[in-house]
Image 1 (cartoon, rainbow over the protein chains, first blue to last red):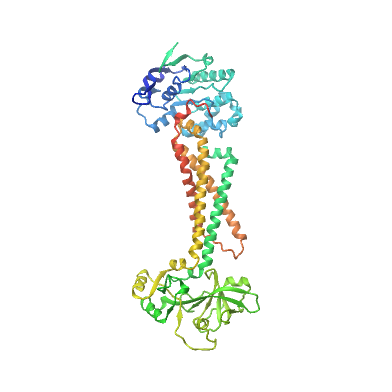
Image 2 (image 1 turned 180 degrees about the vertical axis):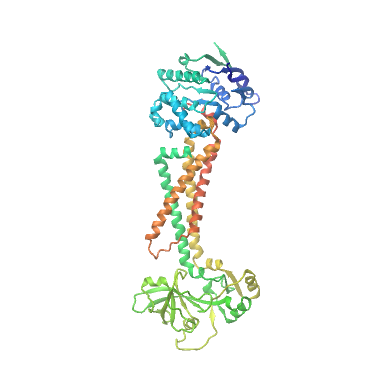
Length: 226
Length: 372
């Protein structure tokens, strides 16, 4: 049985007030099932960041409903949303955004610590993820010593660390060359399949789409297939 | 503390620099505090160590001991209220002494006291003198440094009177000069210039009356007696010439140092926090509570200020061991605790602005950012 990891129903996000309003998302419907890896494309300024922030429980929609792992996020306050993101959502950012003063393994352990996982369990999970992503040998390096591709692999591991229901990736290949970018996307896709999770990748790079199950375009505030 | 400690580990040079600044400032704070206390003690220890808590001075003397003059009838009035044993006269005069056979000239303050009363000197070496001993004095130990020993003969420069040193007391200074205790009979000679052999009894006069009294008794002294002021020990000390000026300027330095340490820390951590704004955004997006991040900043500040404080405490401890005896420096445990906690407190206040900044960072900043 496939369950929906992310459901967005009639989601609208409007900026400004009075006469000068701008609806970046306009009654957007979207659904991501378990094991699905969806790419969302759009030119810059099309509202990709707003879409990702809204779907990722960082920004409250003006109207509409969002369910993540079957749970509505509409009635949650800021602190509850923070807690929710910690356990249910994994994020990958542009340029990996690792903390410069943490070694690779500590990047993962930090997330586990914040989520109050037991240290031994956290160590085990970190080792498992780092080995799977082929960066176990680099576990005692600082990010500054890693290549761009390695950094993004650490970011993938960090995003999966707390066993989230869904992963959101914001332009994960932006700072990588084609070959490394492809590797990262491929790994992301593998992880989604093997962990039975879901992922949404926002990108403007059309060359990175061969492992995606579905490709959607953000246009005039809604997602369309082409 | 996970984040705080690892950041310290990674940026050692940066945090070492700020620690050095904190170390220097806290050292200076402790040093100036010790100096202020030491100077205060060297200034007024004779009064501070008196067991009496109130002093009766002449009404128009503006609380200044040496300006005041009282007589036997005042003493009788005071004793009528607080009892015979709780009031004792004190005469004081500043002078310069020389010592026979020694190349010494020293400024001293003569204290004329009742050698059986509550403020009689507590001799630590040599012999005590009585009210009947003529020409013998008890002197503060500080004079020992200039070569004066028990049995030495000192002479008052103004009157030419000579006294034999019978014993030493410790920590008895008045207005930075060592105190020389004499009895009432020698006081008569000293102040009225009558020959040492003369036995003429003059109506005794002295500067003030030291009183051991309850606050009720002090009030009735003030209301019952005309032409006198009743002041507390604290008031008496702060009206010693130069005392409040000296302490005031040192206190101002200490206050400035506290403010400086808070501002330096505030600026340092604020700049670092601004640098890390995007990191905080990322952490918040990943689900880190603001309180966790705020404690991380506070933890760093606490760690830096406490560890630099500990080092400077050790340095102060080492320094007091090599300081010369004559250096007025005194730091007791309550002062140390107060100064240290004030220092840490000011550091935390300085870091508040950074904590506010951290609280304001929005998780949204993590999305769509190209910069690091």
